[in-house]
Length: 44
Image (tube, rainbow, N blue to C red; front, top):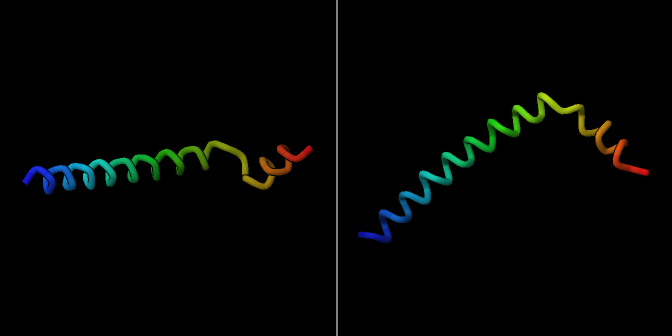
């Protein structure tokens, strides 16, 4: 019983974390410049 509840809680937390990470990555991608300019700036 406890193991099933623990697995359920982990799945809910993982789903919420993935949704939060997807939203934050979308916001970051909209705010930062394209990766090509970022990669060009990193090269010496």
